[in-house]
Amino acid sequence: MLSQFFKLGEHGVTARSEVFAGVSTFLTMAFIIAVNPAILSDAGIDFGAAFVATILATIFGTLIMGLYAGWPVAVAPGMGLNAYFAYVVVLGYGFSWQQALAAVFVSSVAFFLFSLSRARAFMILSIPAEMQVAITAGIGLFLAMIGLSGAGIIVDNPDTLVGLGALNTAETGLALAGLIVMAGLVHRGIKSGILLTILGLSVIGWVTGLAEFGGLVSTPPLTSAAFQLDFSALATPAFLSVVFVMFFVDFFDTTGTLTAISEPAGLRKDDGSIKNLDRAVLADTSASIFGSLLGTSNLTTYLESAAGIRSGGRTGLVALTVAVLFAICLFFEPLFASVPAFATAPALIFVAAGFLGGLARINWSDMSVALPVMITITLMPLTFSIAAGISIGFLAYVGIRLISGRAHEINTGVMLITAFGLIWLALQYYG
Image 1 (spheres, rainbow, N blue to C red):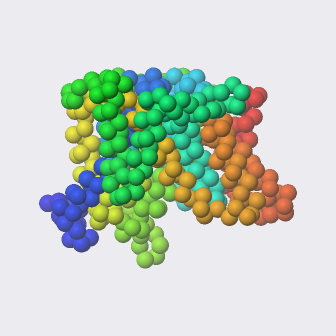
Image 2 (tube, helix red, strand yellow):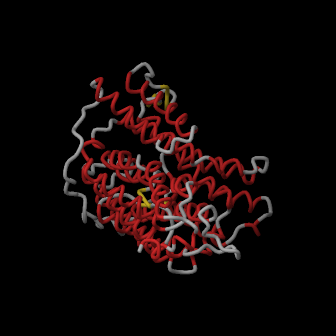
Image 3 (tube, rainbow, N blue to C red):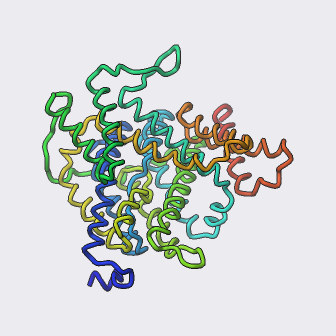
């Protein structure tokens, strides 16, 4: 039955090899079970509620991806947007987490409708590749800033803005050591290196008394965050700017990941088109809508799915396997709730490094490219605002081309984003 439904023979794989590939993907991304609830709990969402929402939304999105789109990839809350949700939208702008969930819902519905139109292809072709790289890298540095701060490696300093933390404290020392071990394990090809390091640091914390162990298994807690969306701020400029950032980042994150994964997964056709790309995008956006209703931030296709693809995964059975493994984790909420902050902080920093790879493709000798890219990637962490990086980065991109007589390089998509950026900047000072 599985063989016929997933067309295993047609893809030259077996059920056993696909299940193995699914396990590989799960092990590389399972860290999100501990990290995402920890981030969302900083925004005020109950850890147990965020834990259940994270897993159920992941199961939902991954099942659709496997059963409807037939892709061997997983969908889960995106790193970057979860941090934006907690530390910028809620703690920075002052929205309640219920209002932030409403923003996730609106941006996800907009993305879903956008994906049904031809505008998606137009937007993909319109945005310069270097600016797409800059946005991804900027979010990476934004994540790194949060991780380094959470680990105590960098701290607030009134004289120099930021300073070096107390590396001689046990928690900070363990976080730094954990980051090094994590990188070493992954470099050696150990797929579960991130998860193993988080668990290892947690065990050290429990044994030494630096963290409290709350238990191993329990029945899944009721999610108090489900259907708590608050649309009271819907018509405000600040809310709409949050929706814009969530939509924009999720759009390029999802599209970029699906495009990157399609070729090694054998989903790219001879004419260059990608098999079931529309279905995959709809699966991703549907998961975000569902996740917002349950109580988690935007979901996205995970690049870690490449681990399963490298292991030979080619069909939706890989995604089905990942979904089943996440379902099992529902019963281990006490274990994941006991994971201390110094154990999850290294994962944020490590994942952030992966966001920077595209910078190697930037032509740094061309200042009309280098300057907008630099502005985008540095302003995101330094202003603690993804919107600021996008807005001022695109403004610089357009301004340089207008002054240098290269206005013909500015297309409609770039003009629209720059216009939105100018509106956002105006609202910061005059709204």
